[in-house]
View 1 (cartoon, rainbow, N blue to C red):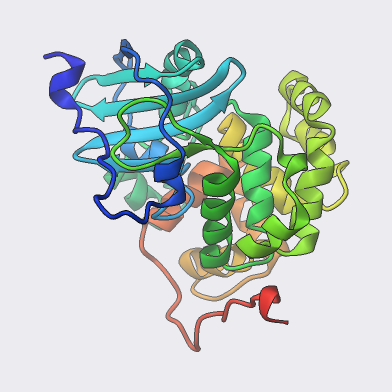
View 2: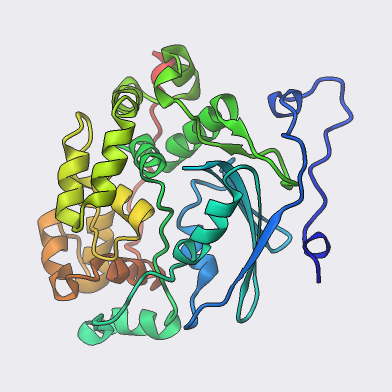
Length: 332
C-alpha cells in the first residue's frame, strides 16, 4: 500500500468569498513525502504516548483524522509535517518539509522507544498495579524540541486548560508557519521568533502579560537554553537550567522535562489539581504537594509513570463545587 492510499485528501478551501486567515496564507508547494516505518522492539501504546503532546482538541499542530495522527513541528532543520498511521506491529510514517528527515528519525523517541520501564514496581499499590495490568504498554514519548516544550508549558501557567489551549491555538495560527503537506485541515508550526510577537497579539490571544513576557525573555536566550538542557544529564540539572529563567518555576520545568525529554521521574509540583487527585486515588483523601511527593517516593525514578497510571485508573475525587471560572484580562 502506498502513502497516497492511506492518507486522507488534503484540506479543500471553503467556497465562500470570505476566506479565513489560513486560506489566505497558501500552503507551501506540495512535494512528495519522505517515508519510513518504525517497528517497536516491544509492544508500545503509541497512541497514548502521542496524545500526551496534544494541546487541546483544536491544537493547530496536532490532530488525528481518519486514523492518521498529524503533527507539525519546527525541527532544527526547519518545519516538518509528520503523518503517522499506527498498525498492529508497526508505525508507518510520512513527512513533508525541510525538517522531514529529522522528524522521521525522531519517530521512535516520539512514540516512547527510549522510555525504559525497567525497575518500575507497580505492585507497591493495588490501584497502580491494576492500572498497569490494563495498560502494560504505556510509554512516555519525547519531542526533543526543548524551547517549544518550554513555551507550551508557560502558556499553561496558573490558568485553566481552556484558556491555555485557546491562546496556544491563536498564537500558532496567527504567528506560526503554515504546515507543508496534505494536512486534513490548516495546521501550523510554532513561531520561529517568539520574541518578535507584539504585545497586542499576546493580548488578543488572551495570554496574560506575565506568561507572554516570560516566553519573550526566554526566547532571547533560546540557543543557550536548548544547549544547556540537552547537555544536562539529570532532571535536577535540567531544573537548574529552566528555573534560572525569570518566571519559570518547578511546575514549568517538570512539564518541559516531560514533554521534551520524556522524563519518567518528573513530578509537576505546584499543579492546581494533581496533588489532590494523587492523594485521593492512593489514600482516599486530599494531600498537598509535600504529601504527594511522599506518596510517590516508592516509585522514585518512575514517578511520572506512576502518575500517568494513576490518572488512567479513573479514581477521581467527586466534584464538590463549580469548575474554576476562567479569568479574561482582556475585559478589564
